[in-house]
Figure 1 (spheres, rainbow, N blue to C red):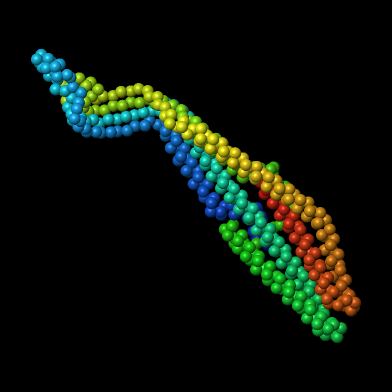
Figure 2: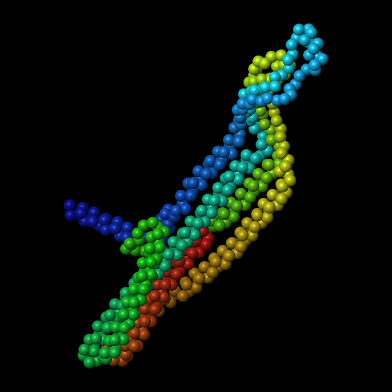
Length: 428
């Protein structure tokens, strides 16, 4: 029972290790998105948006100010001298207002209608934030495309190295065979040298491929933020089932820019509208609103007033037409950019579809070509044993077989890559 349990645990660990040793293109894209430094901007943009919206909303809160002032003026309101003399004869003293005046006041206003300015400002904040977020989406979209490109380059190099190893094994086996023949006097020394030179050439080729793969792996590690190590890349299926076609980030960016221009247009129109405010104003000081009373007394008093105020700043009408025309031109510019993008993207999609169809057609005979080339190599090795052909002919057939296998692997990887590229262009 213990042995069974131990075997089960060991099997599970081996299975988990096998899965952990694999690296898929989906994992690379997800890791690259999470590791990309600009991702942190999403949270920052949201915080800035909330702060700006909060500031706009506070326009509807009561606005107020506290002031204190002390003044001296050379002239003040006073009764005519004749009237002052008459009142003095009757025992009524009217010294007039003091030239030194002072007050502490509070002014409060509440906006009742702003002509749509706050709403337009909120729309401008929201649409401006959406433009920045979509521009960031577009950056990540480009990162995904670059990661996919690197992933398929790594797959292709892996496959070439694997095929190179297989060919080296075949050439090495042939070299031992020819050396044995040379030892028996059946082959010449030059035959051995020729095959050995081919083997060394293959080793050089593998070294170049390996160095290139190491360099590309380092780039991938920078993108995903972790070591690739000896993890095996998984070739996606060519029968990739993509979800329904989505909206390209570039298209969303055009839409967001148009929405932002519309919000700016609303703001320009709202700026030409009048505003209505309720207000209250009061102060404690001298003189008060009852000026005649303060001509007799220097006592401080409370004074206040409340009311409604309608204001219309018509200076915005001077530039309103030019500002709206400028926004219309910017909207036309965005639509022109959209049309150009659609044109170029349609061409790219058409080219991708053509490449996929071409690769599928080419791949129809790849398996058969490889099978035939391998068969020719096997026959050539027998012919070499019997002295029918020389080593040059055998090496030529080995090279043809190697080329056929490389082309078959390359066609397969290029087909999957083309399918991914098509889905990327369609934003699937």
